[in-house]
Length: 331
Image (cartoon, rainbow, N blue to C red; front, side):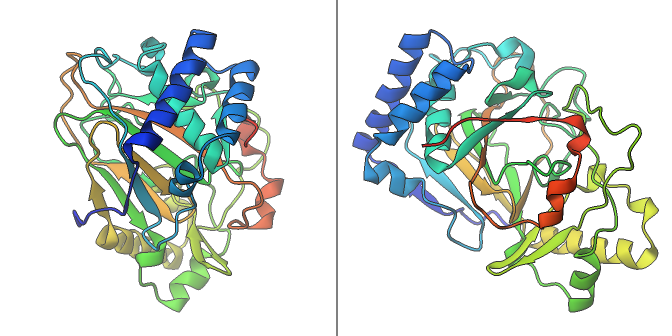
């Protein structure tokens, strides 16, 4: 794994001030960052008036890295309070940053939420939680969070994933690997572009119903577009033992290639990692949580980009395991 620096887009003080004032005004008006139709409408309205400078920083991912770091926001370690003990107890902790992230997401596309995850909030708190240390979810800590496509099980998954850092005293790294950086044999690509196996919902979803009487849909791991390869990858929730040896071997070689090109991105407070969820799988290195209010704390937002053609049309027929995406109106 490389520790090479991710591409950085630096926000100047004037642009940061513009974003901060907008977030503070919305928070003052609504008194909470818990999203409602009215708050989302105000976010979209204000985002429409942002400067061209801010919009340029929010342009699509434009390198084979498939990611960039947006830098410049100020996060005061004392003012934000303790790291929440879980997403369920976070409430409005760091509320102004929830709204800032939502504003940026609205410039980039349509923010989305999930009815079955974190009570349908559009901005999630990612913190280590007691009792979840070894799960393959954002609440884990002591295990490697395996590289994966965010919400890979669902056809309505985000095109972009945003991870905003609130606290990271121990420089715990997010891992990221772009399919555009890998080298794969043509025969492996041929195997992996065929729909062979399903991807099941991860443990972060409280209920993944609606498919008990239906076979889980088999989906392709790779997809060739006019602009290059994209992927849909989540080995922790893919029943690889149901595939034949040739497919498992090809999948293993893909995993090895992703590991070879993986980079470690250690975010500092105020930095936002923006990941193209069609090009890049992401994960996290293991760490030991202290549960004393000083642990790593990220904010997460998911974005769909209207009109994007990076996925097979057949995905539209998937049942999504009964999960529904809630989509805000973009600017």
